[in-house]
Length: 340
Image (cartoon, rainbow, N blue to C red; front, top):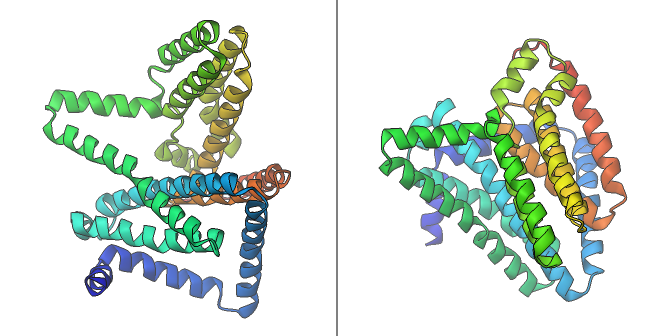
């Protein structure tokens, strides 16, 4: 069995392509020993800080944090891999290989295998049981994404052309913002009613769930629009204003409904709104700097680094966000008018 898996990975053209890119990037960036030593030092610092913060917790809390990190990392990586496979299938010379289900499954399996086990070893060893739980949680967390993928594929294959067009229009409404007003009003009514008539614990859970659904449904960034604005000479601040106005208005309305209900739900809703705005802020700036298939992966890496720093030194997380945002703004200004 190991020999079959190894041969399948070596014969996967998608995996070979990305491994060659990774090797060439590594060779170009770390041709000097000083560069390699500097990157190793910078990478080791957050790892050591994260391990120190995790091992200072009691065993139960430490295990919960490990499982949360595993779920977040697995989902973020899988979403990035699905976007990468979509690029392979529609915009790459390897579209013939990407059309094979065996190649796509092997690519995702190899990437998760190469990321999950080293991450578990770095964070959890020498606790062998926690390392095993981390790896199992990593793979179990992929089930929702796979179930959604299967469901969407089955619906699109069996649906009539009219229903399929309706599904596409509903999906595209996430980016265009159509239906945002009735969705926001419905969310405000639900939050206000549960705040008035439900128990505080249940009201808080419902408010967070409703705010999460409404905000994240209208949070995706349209890469083509942002890239077109960059080529036409629009400044990053203009793209940010256009991209952040709608989710900011939705979040403000939901916060007002939480405040009007007279329950302490406004804090979590405000924090969730700030997180969505920060996520969209990074997505817009990265869309002006990187290619489309690199944006989601870069977002996942940035969120994981920020999470690891926040777990070890919470005071340093806002500072890192400010420095990283300023650096992205500087890079985004330099790409204005540039054809990539």
